[in-house]
Length: 314
Length: 137
Ligand SMILES: Nc1nc2c(ncn2[C@@H]2O[C@H](COP(=O)(O)OP(=O)(O)OP(=O)(O)O)[C@@H](O)[C@H]2O)c(=O)[nH]1
Ligand SMILES: [Mg+2]
Image (cartoon, rainbow over all chains, first blue to last red; front, side, top):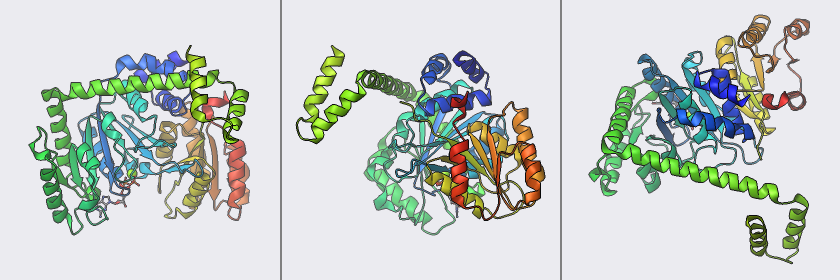
């Protein structure tokens, strides 16, 4: 079963790929066997992150970019992340609404993903999902993060090129742009340039980049004004994305990034396997008993954790 | 270890311009803990089926007010079959006369919820009848 699925993914089969993404998202054991087979076929795609506040226009930008890539016959994969409700565990994944122009193009694969409690603007599964789309032969993979504001910086680990979208006059003013988001941007987009305050925002941003010393780096993030709904400025973004990719390759930074990603991946995989091993060996009844001991103040959780770990690891 | 979520596509085929009903059901499903993929207005059967496949959903909920349910719903089920898929539960709601329900069911629609059905009834039905496809076999 897993062998067949991975073969089909490598041939670009949509149904099989969709299923593999599901197995990953649900954390099922088959997923790991499939990933072993797919992994050697990854590393070819250019992964682009798009992040920014809720409603900034990320999905609108993504759909226009898809259009440009498709004009050049590039195959495109999209991972669009939206938040899971912490109260109900449910989610409404609505990024696809803006992307349905490409809804019947067999070379465009769009997947909506819920965060399922993961913080940082992505789902836990997003990393492996991007790998699967890579293995299925996509040239460009665009990851749209949750629009949560300033803390969604995990994307920098996953993407080769990160696009940060800002909107003038949305409370998204310059004071609100924290160092975190400044640091991760390879390209700034000031969207909704049909609104007033656009030029001021661009000027402020330039000053901010200067003050942060970003202008002296090898790569200075360009600031691009767009009206995503009308497709204005999208060509420029595409060009900036290409320039950045070229820069990464030329400077050796791409290799560095990829190495850092592999390290993070390996660490994640080890942690995940360790977690499973440990929790599968702890007897549920014994655990309940220990928790009661803690709750009644008979024992502290640190000593208990030490005891459990030393009994398992020895 | 895994967390098996049920995923449901809520889609609005046809030409009418009201998605209030679709949004209400999408929100109620979210509140009930489902992952809902919402694709907006004016979806063609091809778009709906493609989205359902790429998103690997367990069910498709269709909201139809235009009166075209007798063509749209069977068209969607037929397209799914053509892609080799027979285990996505298709259900629907909207302005659908009682007389059309037997025909729609004969075409493979699992349930129809007519106006006036309390939303809680629909949610209960989904909870009972839609399970993750990758766990069903
Ligand atoms: N005026 C104006 N509106 C825009 C522009 N770009 C996008 N919008 C609108 O902004 C709204 C949000 O756009 P989306 O593309 O869904 O934004 P998003 O960042 O993906 O939103 P979330 O995924 O919900 O965080 C939509 O109503 C768009 O039509 C623009 O350049 N100008
Ligand atoms: Mg969006």
